[in-house]
Image (cartoon, rainbow, N blue to C red):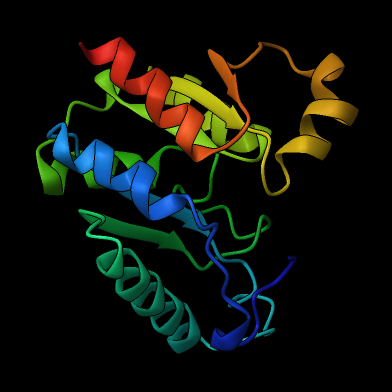
Length: 167
C-alpha cells in the first residue's frame, strides 16, 4: 500500500490472525519489526505508528492472536541508525527484552530486506509472496546474493513451514 499515512488505511490480511494464533498456541514468540521512515521524512507523525500498532493488536485480539513485541525504526536510510532493517538493532533489542535466541528465530517478510535481516542475525528468512512479496520474487530474485530459506504464498503457509521446523 505504500506509506500508511492514516490509521484508517491499515488493512490486515484475513488469514493473519489465524496464522499468528497458531504460532501463539505453539508457544512461539511473535514479534513485529518494521521500518517506518515516513516519520523521518515527515509524511506522518510518530504517533500514527503507535495508532496503527494499536489497531493491529485489536484486530489480532479479535482473532484470539497476539504479538509479544513491536519494534519500529522511525529513521530514513540516510540516518545511519543500527535499527533500520536489514540492520539487526531491532531484533537484537527484541532478543534482549523478550529473552529470545534470535539465531533460533524465523523472520517473515514481503521484502528481501527482511530476508537479509534474518541472514544478518543468523535466523532463517522466509519471503511471503503476499503484499510486496510477489513483485520482489518475480522481478528481483535473480539479483539476490542468497535465496530465502523458504518462500511462502502468505503468512499462513509461512506459519505451516515454521511449525514443521520446530516440531
